Image: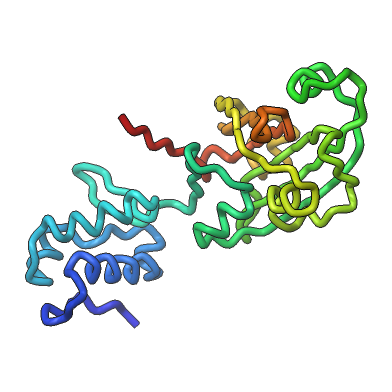
Length: 244
């Protein structure tokens, strides 16, 4: 059933909230999911009998949520299926996606014990060849994976490898091992997909990949986890809020 473009002027619900609800309904329409442009602000304002500023206020909110994509001179349409994460409020990936209401699928969870190489030993501040737990996770939408994680944990944490890593990683560390992830030190760069990443993330060799290194520390600034994240460049982005 097609969405009816009307609002209730007698309702106590603010007009911009009603417009936001209307736009959210339009987003789910098959035609708009397939790339059809949403009605122009001026046309929608006339049809609903409200100001363009009210339309823009509701539209801006959905653009900020990465649900709509607006281009000057072109129009507004449903944004491509993508995921965004913020640097100012980091959580375990699973919990962050859950909080955003994004359904995702775990394609792979693999645990092994490896000798720390120079990079891992330097990051975790341990001796080379120290045995560390390596956790590999492949996650994505029903249509396919979009992120591949490799985590290495400091032996001090006490992980055994028998944990249920399908749950929230940092909840496991806090509740079961009394280890509180408090500080995240990030390094982000763009790389080209290697043959391995192409196979894992269903990309063509050379396609863009967002590569993120993360060193997670406890409140005493002691390293807990050294994490490497490889994200499909066409389905993921980082956002940063900077306050003056």
